Length: 316
Image (cartoon, rainbow, N blue to C red; front, side):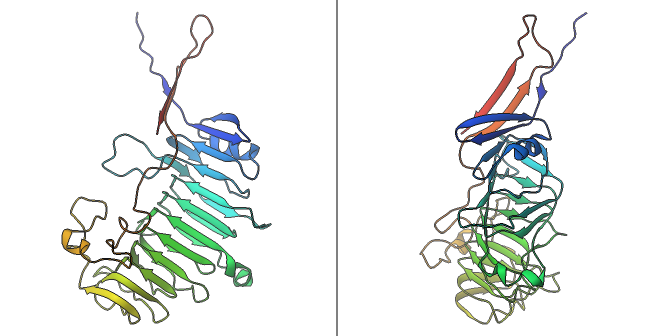
């Protein structure tokens, strides 16, 4: 009798500490690696699904990047479960970095002086600290999102305190209604306002509302330049070189990932390049930087001489 047994596809988390590598396996790999990590360490995650862990150390967590629908070469790095980011004891050199992760549930940025999300996708929304007692101390906080994607219809991408930067990103659920204290800088991005947009500085971007949106108006505290504003009653008063169109329909190539049509691409930003996510200094790219653990297969049993077959595929 012959029995065919397939190798097991496993998740792996690699912890880098001062040149030393430690390996943690399975869905708890991120949690296990985080427990051993110290400030400055890097955790690299393979494709697959990992349980979330609250982050209170100044580390870097990397996955494979945003996986678009037409990309058949990679599977995402999923983070399952709600996650909070909180570094209450800050110093100038403590920075958090997240790259190439797909967050399945909400991400709460409770307090951190400087956090960068790159090439991350948010399926459960992102929110900042809404405690008014901490508003003053968060005036210097910087929340940066570069090449990120947040399009969940029923979740909000919103920060009330601190300084938000969206760079070459797509956010179709932006809410800055409560942000009357700090600024949101939107550069070479595609943004749909889900509520009233306060204190937003739009440059080289596409800002729109759908016909069915009851809100989504740009308030007088916002300004911008060299952008496309799509949708009636957006209320944008303080802008320079703004192109107004009635609808977002026809701005993007059908079947593309927010690529402008030839006509829309003729509208140039302050740098002479097209507006939107493919223009500017950092044109949009979905894949994370550096090596990516694309596949990690483990044989279900050892060989006769006690060896275990492991197949690891690394994508550059």
